[in-house]
Image 1 (cartoon, rainbow, N blue to C red):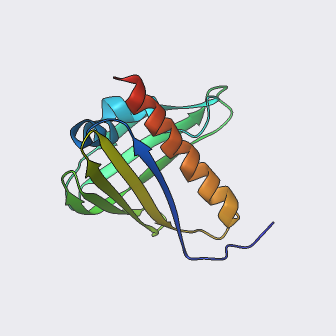
Image 2 (spheres, rainbow, N blue to C red):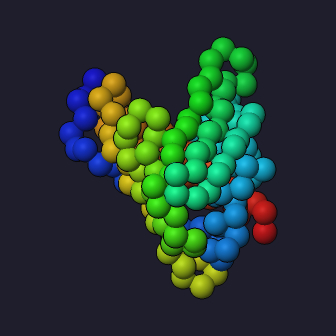
Length: 142
C-alpha cells in the first residue's frame, strides 16, 4: 500500500443547480441521508446537523447488508452561508468545503487532512465517490 504522500487532499465537482439548493441538500439531514455514502451497497440511515460554529454533526453510514457501519461526526469551526463550511472530524482532522456560485451552476470543493491508515489514492477516491453521489442526488431533484 502506498503511504500518504500529502497532508491535504482535495476533491471537487460542478453541480448544475443554483447554490441555494446545493446548500440545502448539503446541510439538511433529510437530504444528507439520501447521498452521504460512497457506493450503492452503503446507505446513511440517519443524520443530525447543528449547522453553526461549535455545532455538532453526525451521519451514520452503514453497509446495506448490515455487516458494518460507523458514525462520521465532528464539530463546526466556521460556517459562511452559501460560501464555506469548516469542521474538525472526531479524530482531529480538519475539513474545509467551499461553495462557488456560477449562476445556475455551483462548484463544491472539499479539502481534508489525510489519515495514515489508507493510501492517498484510496482516501481521495472514497471522498470523491461521496461527492459524486451528492452531485447525482442534487441533479436528480431538478
